[in-house]
Amino acid sequence: MYRFLTYIISIACVAVLTSCGGSVGNKAGTAIAMRYAKLLSMEQYDGYRLVSVSDPWKNGSVLHQYALIDSNGNASAVPEGVTAIRVPLQRLCISTSVHAGLMHKLGALDQVGSICEGKYILNPTIQAQIKSGHIKDVGSGLNPNVEMIAQLRTDALLMSPFEGASYGLLEKTGIPIIECADYMETSALGRAEWMKFYGMLVGRETEANKLFDEIEKNYNDFKTLVAKEEAHPKLLADMLNGNTWYMPGGGSIYGTLYKDAGANFTIASDNVSGSQPLSLEKVLLEGKDADYWIIKYSRPQDFNYASILKENSVYGKFKAFRQKHIFGCNAFSVPFYEEAPFRPDLLLGDIISIIYPNLLPDRKMVFYAPLED
Image (cartoon, rainbow, N blue to C red):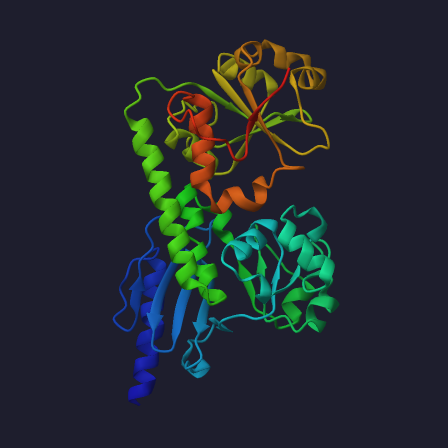
Protein backbone atom coordinates (compact mmCIF):
# COMPACT_ATOMS: atom_id res chain seq x y z
CA MET A 1 0.00 0.00 0.00
CA TYR A 2 2.85 2.36 0.88
CA ARG A 3 4.57 1.74 -2.45
CA PHE A 4 1.31 2.34 -4.29
CA LEU A 5 0.80 5.67 -2.52
CA THR A 6 4.41 6.66 -3.27
CA TYR A 7 3.88 5.85 -6.94
CA ILE A 8 0.68 7.94 -7.09
CA ILE A 9 2.43 10.86 -5.40
CA SER A 10 5.31 10.58 -7.86
CA ILE A 11 2.94 10.75 -10.83
CA ALA A 12 1.15 13.75 -9.34
CA CYS A 13 4.44 15.54 -8.79
CA VAL A 14 5.45 14.98 -12.39
CA ALA A 15 2.14 16.50 -13.48
CA VAL A 16 2.75 19.52 -11.26
CA LEU A 17 6.27 19.90 -12.65
CA THR A 18 5.22 19.85 -16.29
CA SER A 19 2.12 22.00 -15.83
CA CYS A 20 4.26 24.70 -14.22
CA GLY A 21 6.64 24.76 -17.16
CA GLY A 22 9.58 23.27 -15.28
CA SER A 23 9.06 24.71 -11.79
CA VAL A 24 10.00 22.34 -9.01
CA GLY A 25 7.09 21.06 -6.95
CA ASN A 26 8.40 17.55 -6.47
CA LYS A 27 9.77 16.28 -3.15
CA ALA A 28 10.63 12.87 -4.58
CA GLY A 29 13.10 14.18 -7.17
CA THR A 30 15.94 16.67 -7.07
CA ALA A 31 15.90 19.34 -9.75
CA ILE A 32 18.86 19.51 -12.12
CA ALA A 33 19.38 23.22 -12.70
CA MET A 34 19.03 24.57 -16.23
CA ARG A 35 20.17 28.16 -16.62
CA TYR A 36 18.91 29.08 -20.08
CA ALA A 37 16.87 26.28 -21.70
CA LYS A 38 13.12 26.89 -21.48
CA LEU A 39 11.88 23.72 -23.18
CA LEU A 40 13.90 21.24 -21.12
CA SER A 41 13.67 20.31 -17.45
CA MET A 42 15.35 17.44 -15.60
CA GLU A 43 15.12 15.81 -12.19
CA GLN A 44 17.18 13.18 -10.43
CA TYR A 45 15.33 10.23 -8.92
CA ASP A 46 16.69 7.12 -7.29
CA GLY A 47 18.15 5.13 -10.20
CA TYR A 48 16.99 7.37 -13.08
CA ARG A 49 16.68 10.91 -14.32
CA LEU A 50 13.35 12.27 -15.48
CA VAL A 51 13.69 14.52 -18.53
CA SER A 52 10.69 16.58 -19.68
CA VAL A 53 10.58 18.22 -23.11
CA SER A 54 7.97 20.96 -23.34
CA ASP A 55 5.85 21.22 -26.46
CA PRO A 56 7.02 24.34 -28.34
CA TRP A 57 3.71 24.54 -30.21
CA LYS A 58 1.34 24.06 -27.23
CA ASN A 59 2.11 26.32 -24.33
CA GLY A 60 1.98 24.46 -21.01
CA SER A 61 1.98 21.00 -22.62
CA VAL A 62 4.62 18.28 -22.58
CA LEU A 63 5.95 16.93 -25.86
CA HIS A 64 7.73 13.91 -24.38
CA GLN A 65 9.16 12.58 -21.12
CA TYR A 66 12.13 10.26 -20.75
CA ALA A 67 13.56 8.30 -17.87
CA LEU A 68 17.31 7.86 -18.26
CA ILE A 69 18.03 4.71 -16.30
CA ASP A 70 21.56 4.10 -15.07
CA SER A 71 23.22 0.71 -14.59
CA ASN A 72 21.70 0.33 -11.12
CA GLY A 73 18.27 1.64 -12.03
CA ASN A 74 15.05 -0.32 -12.06
CA ALA A 75 12.80 0.27 -15.07
CA SER A 76 9.76 -0.79 -13.07
CA ALA A 77 10.10 2.39 -11.00
CA VAL A 78 9.53 4.57 -14.07
CA PRO A 79 6.04 6.17 -14.18
CA GLU A 80 3.65 4.98 -16.86
CA GLY A 81 3.73 7.01 -20.05
CA VAL A 82 7.39 7.92 -19.67
CA THR A 83 9.84 6.49 -22.24
CA ALA A 84 12.50 4.45 -20.44
CA ILE A 85 16.01 4.60 -21.90
CA ARG A 86 19.01 2.64 -20.64
CA VAL A 87 22.09 4.85 -20.62
CA PRO A 88 24.71 5.18 -21.83
CA LEU A 89 23.44 4.48 -25.34
CA GLN A 90 25.73 2.36 -27.52
CA ARG A 91 24.08 2.24 -30.97
CA LEU A 92 22.57 5.64 -31.56
CA CYS A 93 20.95 6.78 -34.83
CA ILE A 94 21.19 10.50 -35.54
CA SER A 95 19.00 12.27 -38.08
CA THR A 96 20.71 15.68 -38.16
CA SER A 97 24.23 16.90 -38.86
CA VAL A 98 24.19 19.28 -35.90
CA HIS A 99 23.74 16.45 -33.38
CA ALA A 100 26.32 14.36 -35.18
CA GLY A 101 28.75 17.24 -34.82
CA LEU A 102 27.98 17.49 -31.11
CA MET A 103 28.67 13.79 -30.59
CA HIS A 104 32.06 14.32 -32.17
CA LYS A 105 32.77 17.21 -29.77
CA LEU A 106 31.76 15.05 -26.80
CA GLY A 107 33.96 12.15 -27.92
CA ALA A 108 30.99 9.84 -28.44
CA LEU A 109 31.23 8.97 -32.14
CA ASP A 110 31.97 5.34 -31.28
CA GLN A 111 28.44 5.18 -29.88
CA VAL A 112 26.85 6.40 -33.13
CA GLY A 113 25.80 3.44 -35.26
CA SER A 114 23.99 5.28 -38.03
CA ILE A 115 23.26 8.69 -39.39
CA CYS A 116 20.91 10.25 -41.93
CA GLU A 117 22.18 11.99 -45.05
CA GLY A 118 25.80 11.44 -44.13
CA LYS A 119 26.99 12.50 -47.57
CA TYR A 120 26.19 16.11 -46.70
CA ILE A 121 28.24 16.18 -43.50
CA LEU A 122 31.51 18.10 -43.78
CA ASN A 123 33.19 16.84 -40.60
CA PRO A 124 36.18 14.77 -41.83
CA THR A 125 36.18 12.46 -38.81
CA ILE A 126 32.53 11.57 -39.33
CA GLN A 127 33.14 11.09 -43.04
CA ALA A 128 36.00 8.70 -42.25
CA GLN A 129 33.70 6.74 -39.91
CA ILE A 130 31.09 6.47 -42.66
CA LYS A 131 33.69 5.42 -45.23
CA SER A 132 35.06 2.72 -42.91
CA GLY A 133 31.54 1.42 -42.27
CA HIS A 134 31.60 2.11 -38.55
CA ILE A 135 28.74 4.57 -39.06
CA LYS A 136 26.06 3.58 -41.58
CA ASP A 137 24.26 6.13 -43.73
CA VAL A 138 20.54 5.27 -43.45
CA GLY A 139 19.27 7.75 -46.02
CA SER A 140 16.96 10.72 -45.80
CA GLY A 141 16.16 12.25 -42.44
CA LEU A 142 12.52 12.53 -43.50
CA ASN A 143 12.31 8.98 -44.82
CA PRO A 144 15.15 6.88 -43.38
CA ASN A 145 15.76 3.19 -44.08
CA VAL A 146 13.77 1.74 -41.19
CA GLU A 147 14.80 -1.85 -41.92
CA MET A 148 18.48 -0.96 -41.77
CA ILE A 149 18.01 1.00 -38.55
CA ALA A 150 16.35 -2.02 -36.95
CA GLN A 151 18.99 -4.45 -38.25
CA LEU A 152 21.73 -2.33 -36.68
CA ARG A 153 20.13 -2.98 -33.27
CA THR A 154 19.73 0.75 -32.76
CA ASP A 155 18.99 1.58 -29.13
CA ALA A 156 17.61 5.12 -29.68
CA LEU A 157 17.01 7.71 -32.40
CA LEU A 158 17.66 11.44 -32.22
CA MET A 159 14.97 13.15 -34.30
CA SER A 160 14.07 16.81 -34.77
CA PRO A 161 10.32 17.19 -34.21
CA PHE A 162 7.95 19.53 -35.96
CA GLU A 163 4.40 20.54 -35.17
CA GLY A 164 2.13 17.51 -35.42
CA ALA A 165 5.11 15.28 -36.21
CA SER A 166 4.53 11.60 -36.97
CA TYR A 167 7.44 9.19 -37.32
CA GLY A 168 5.56 6.54 -39.28
CA LEU A 169 7.21 3.13 -39.37
CA LEU A 170 9.93 4.24 -36.96
CA GLU A 171 7.36 4.36 -34.18
CA LYS A 172 6.42 0.74 -34.86
CA THR A 173 9.97 -0.51 -34.34
CA GLY A 174 9.77 0.11 -30.60
CA ILE A 175 13.08 1.99 -30.71
CA PRO A 176 12.90 5.05 -28.40
CA ILE A 177 12.61 8.30 -30.35
CA ILE A 178 14.29 11.23 -28.61
CA GLU A 179 12.63 14.43 -29.81
CA CYS A 180 15.31 17.10 -30.13
CA ALA A 181 13.34 20.31 -29.80
CA ASP A 182 16.46 22.32 -28.99
CA TYR A 183 16.13 24.31 -32.23
CA MET A 184 12.87 25.80 -30.94
CA GLU A 185 14.57 27.54 -28.00
CA THR A 186 14.54 31.32 -28.18
CA SER A 187 18.12 31.95 -27.05
CA ALA A 188 21.43 30.66 -28.32
CA LEU A 189 22.61 29.59 -24.86
CA GLY A 190 19.23 27.94 -24.28
CA ARG A 191 19.74 25.71 -27.29
CA ALA A 192 23.37 25.00 -26.46
CA GLU A 193 22.43 23.95 -22.92
CA TRP A 194 20.64 20.93 -24.36
CA MET A 195 24.07 19.37 -24.74
CA LYS A 196 23.81 18.49 -21.04
CA PHE A 197 20.91 16.17 -21.87
CA TYR A 198 22.66 14.70 -24.90
CA GLY A 199 25.78 14.17 -22.82
CA MET A 200 23.77 12.15 -20.31
CA LEU A 201 22.47 9.93 -23.11
CA VAL A 202 25.97 8.80 -24.10
CA GLY A 203 27.73 8.88 -20.76
CA ARG A 204 29.54 12.14 -21.52
CA GLU A 205 27.89 14.33 -18.91
CA THR A 206 31.19 15.65 -17.56
CA GLU A 207 32.41 16.57 -21.04
CA ALA A 208 29.10 18.24 -21.90
CA ASN A 209 29.03 20.31 -18.71
CA LYS A 210 32.64 21.40 -19.19
CA LEU A 211 32.02 22.39 -22.81
CA PHE A 212 28.87 24.31 -21.95
CA ASP A 213 30.59 26.20 -19.13
CA GLU A 214 33.29 27.27 -21.60
CA ILE A 215 30.68 28.36 -24.15
CA GLU A 216 28.68 30.26 -21.55
CA LYS A 217 31.75 32.13 -20.30
CA ASN A 218 32.89 33.05 -23.80
CA TYR A 219 29.40 34.13 -24.83
CA ASN A 220 28.83 36.31 -21.78
CA ASP A 221 32.33 37.80 -22.03
CA PHE A 222 31.48 38.86 -25.59
CA LYS A 223 28.19 40.39 -24.42
CA THR A 224 30.02 42.34 -21.71
CA LEU A 225 32.52 43.57 -24.29
CA VAL A 226 29.84 45.15 -26.50
CA ALA A 227 27.64 46.39 -23.66
CA LYS A 228 29.67 49.60 -23.39
CA GLU A 229 29.18 50.43 -27.06
CA GLU A 230 26.77 53.29 -27.62
CA ALA A 231 26.39 52.82 -31.37
CA HIS A 232 24.36 49.84 -32.60
CA PRO A 233 24.99 49.22 -36.31
CA LYS A 234 21.96 48.09 -38.26
CA LEU A 235 22.20 44.49 -39.43
CA LEU A 236 20.51 42.78 -42.37
CA ALA A 237 20.40 38.98 -42.58
CA ASP A 238 20.06 36.43 -45.39
CA MET A 239 18.70 36.74 -48.93
CA LEU A 240 15.71 36.11 -51.15
CA ASN A 241 14.58 32.51 -51.60
CA GLY A 242 12.37 32.62 -54.64
CA ASN A 243 10.06 35.54 -54.02
CA THR A 244 10.36 35.43 -50.23
CA TRP A 245 13.01 36.75 -47.89
CA TYR A 246 13.14 34.50 -44.83
CA MET A 247 14.45 36.65 -42.01
CA PRO A 248 15.21 35.29 -38.53
CA GLY A 249 12.50 36.54 -36.18
CA GLY A 250 13.57 39.05 -33.58
CA GLY A 251 12.63 36.53 -30.89
CA SER A 252 14.43 33.61 -32.55
CA ILE A 253 17.77 32.09 -31.58
CA TYR A 254 19.59 34.06 -34.27
CA GLY A 255 17.58 37.23 -33.74
CA THR A 256 18.47 37.33 -30.04
CA LEU A 257 22.09 36.45 -30.80
CA TYR A 258 22.40 39.37 -33.22
CA LYS A 259 21.05 41.68 -30.52
CA ASP A 260 23.46 40.19 -27.98
CA ALA A 261 26.21 41.16 -30.42
CA GLY A 262 25.07 44.77 -30.15
CA ALA A 263 23.34 44.93 -33.51
CA ASN A 264 20.26 46.91 -34.33
CA PHE A 265 18.23 44.00 -35.69
CA THR A 266 14.74 45.40 -36.03
CA ILE A 267 13.59 44.34 -39.49
CA ALA A 268 11.86 41.18 -38.23
CA SER A 269 9.28 41.30 -35.45
CA ASP A 270 10.40 40.61 -31.89
CA ASN A 271 7.41 38.35 -31.27
CA VAL A 272 8.47 35.90 -34.01
CA SER A 273 10.52 33.06 -32.57
CA GLY A 274 11.17 31.29 -35.86
CA SER A 275 11.83 32.47 -39.38
CA GLN A 276 9.66 35.31 -40.67
CA PRO A 277 8.74 35.38 -44.39
CA LEU A 278 9.04 38.90 -45.75
CA SER A 279 8.58 40.45 -49.17
CA LEU A 280 11.50 42.04 -50.99
CA GLU A 281 9.65 45.36 -50.86
CA LYS A 282 9.41 45.27 -47.06
CA VAL A 283 13.07 44.32 -46.62
CA LEU A 284 14.16 47.03 -49.05
CA LEU A 285 12.03 49.60 -47.28
CA GLU A 286 13.28 48.76 -43.79
CA GLY A 287 16.74 47.38 -44.51
CA LYS A 288 18.20 49.35 -47.40
CA ASP A 289 20.09 51.54 -44.90
CA ALA A 290 21.56 48.59 -42.96
CA ASP A 291 25.24 49.07 -42.16
CA TYR A 292 26.14 45.39 -42.47
CA TRP A 293 24.65 42.40 -44.24
CA ILE A 294 25.30 38.74 -43.48
CA ILE A 295 24.24 35.94 -45.80
CA LYS A 296 24.18 32.15 -45.51
CA TYR A 297 23.97 29.99 -48.61
CA SER A 298 25.17 26.69 -50.05
CA ARG A 299 26.70 26.52 -53.51
CA PRO A 300 29.92 25.18 -55.09
CA GLN A 301 31.27 28.69 -55.73
CA ASP A 302 31.42 31.47 -53.15
CA PHE A 303 29.27 34.50 -53.80
CA ASN A 304 30.96 37.77 -54.65
CA TYR A 305 29.47 41.19 -55.28
CA ALA A 306 29.09 40.58 -58.99
CA SER A 307 27.40 37.20 -58.58
CA ILE A 308 24.83 38.32 -56.00
CA LEU A 309 23.99 41.27 -58.22
CA LYS A 310 23.27 38.75 -60.98
CA GLU A 311 20.92 36.97 -58.57
CA ASN A 312 18.87 40.14 -58.21
CA SER A 313 19.79 43.65 -59.32
CA VAL A 314 17.80 45.10 -56.38
CA TYR A 315 20.58 43.99 -54.03
CA GLY A 316 22.64 46.87 -55.44
CA LYS A 317 20.26 49.33 -53.78
CA PHE A 318 21.29 48.28 -50.27
CA LYS A 319 23.78 50.49 -48.44
CA ALA A 320 25.73 47.45 -47.25
CA PHE A 321 26.23 46.41 -50.87
CA ARG A 322 27.47 49.83 -51.94
CA GLN A 323 29.85 50.10 -49.00
CA LYS A 324 31.13 46.52 -49.44
CA HIS A 325 29.92 45.46 -45.99
CA ILE A 326 28.52 42.04 -46.92
CA PHE A 327 29.82 38.93 -45.17
CA GLY A 328 29.00 35.43 -46.37
CA CYS A 329 28.95 31.90 -45.01
CA ASN A 330 28.94 29.21 -47.68
CA ALA A 331 27.56 26.11 -45.96
CA PHE A 332 28.70 24.04 -48.93
CA SER A 333 32.24 24.24 -47.54
CA VAL A 334 31.83 25.76 -44.06
CA PRO A 335 30.29 23.51 -41.36
CA PHE A 336 27.89 26.17 -40.10
CA TYR A 337 24.94 23.86 -39.48
CA GLU A 338 27.15 21.21 -37.89
CA GLU A 339 28.90 23.51 -35.43
CA ALA A 340 27.27 26.90 -34.92
CA PRO A 341 24.12 25.77 -33.04
CA PHE A 342 26.19 24.25 -30.23
CA ARG A 343 28.99 26.82 -30.42
CA PRO A 344 27.04 30.07 -30.28
CA ASP A 345 30.02 31.76 -28.65
CA LEU A 346 31.98 31.36 -31.88
CA LEU A 347 29.07 32.70 -33.92
CA LEU A 348 28.59 35.65 -31.56
CA GLY A 349 32.28 36.44 -31.90
CA ASP A 350 31.89 36.47 -35.68
CA ILE A 351 28.98 38.92 -35.61
CA ILE A 352 30.85 41.23 -33.24
CA SER A 353 33.92 41.05 -35.48
CA ILE A 354 31.71 42.13 -38.40
CA ILE A 355 29.81 45.03 -36.87
CA TYR A 356 32.52 46.24 -34.46
CA PRO A 357 35.72 45.55 -36.42
CA ASN A 358 37.90 47.44 -33.93
CA LEU A 359 36.81 45.46 -30.86
CA LEU A 360 38.40 42.14 -31.84
CA PRO A 361 41.16 43.14 -34.27
CA ASP A 362 43.20 39.93 -33.90
CA ARG A 363 40.32 37.47 -34.01
CA LYS A 364 39.89 35.27 -37.08
CA MET A 365 36.26 34.65 -38.01
CA VAL A 366 35.08 31.04 -37.89
CA PHE A 367 31.99 30.96 -40.10
CA TYR A 368 31.79 34.22 -42.04
CA ALA A 369 34.15 35.99 -44.42
CA PRO A 370 33.89 39.31 -46.32
CA LEU A 371 32.60 38.98 -49.85
CA GLU A 372 35.19 39.56 -52.52
CA ASP A 373 34.72 42.01 -55.38
